[in-house]
Image (cartoon, rainbow, N blue to C red; front, top):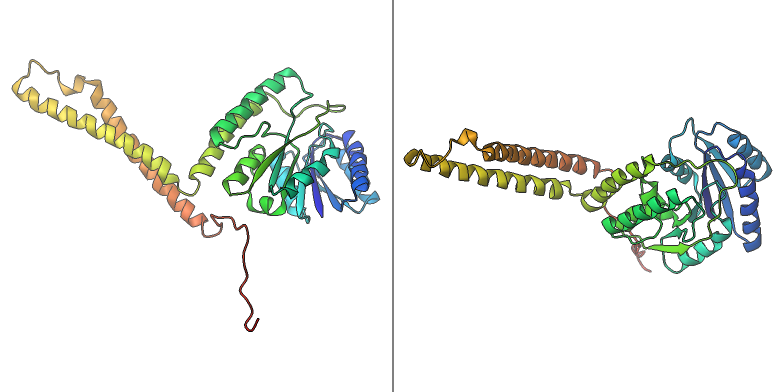
Length: 320
């Protein structure tokens, strides 16, 4: 079975049209699917449209969130209901073409665990396209996961991928990065992108600021999530060492000033004294934070595995 998760916010005009397109694709290719709409706090008739579709088709399921929690929360709510072996996501604004789903399935059968869409020809205003391209380039350089369109809403996963990932905040745009960090194979597929027909875009300039901060978070989680002291402790040791060397130099100057008081200025007039003391304090604080982070990581590690199993050979039965 293929689970299709569709987050929607104020897409009352688009939901029925999207369903008809999905139904046509499913019928044409003979797919076994379940369609899960997630109403992320809509204030129009989106939920009513979803309920009407659910009464007409048993394959349609719906979730209504109490308010707008964001796309990551909407996807997480939809993933919890998925029963399929393969999970596809696309936005409910009709800009993603459902006819691309069979092509995603072909890519998955080539051995990928995650297939990310790429809107090579994007039907959006330039003030959204160019900042998005810069952001995607930055994400690829920082994380090492080379994709053209990390934030594309159309993706396809094997079910085990979403079972191992925990989404919160705005981390939905980094699902391929998080999956790659756990050893899943990530691919990319160029897709057909369409202009918006109804409704308004939910994304503004603020998302790029949030996206950059989330990128730093993801980089830390994927690089040092299981060993935070390696980063924080390294910064602390370097800072501590610089402060210690500065104080040693000042100690030598203080001794020399006992013999040559006219050639060396008093220590309290030297900026190096302040910088060295600040470096010592910063180093001690960073190392202390690193130890606390290690304690938290060790505690949470009791409940969450720090690895991902690809395959397992069960024990043979006796006498077999």
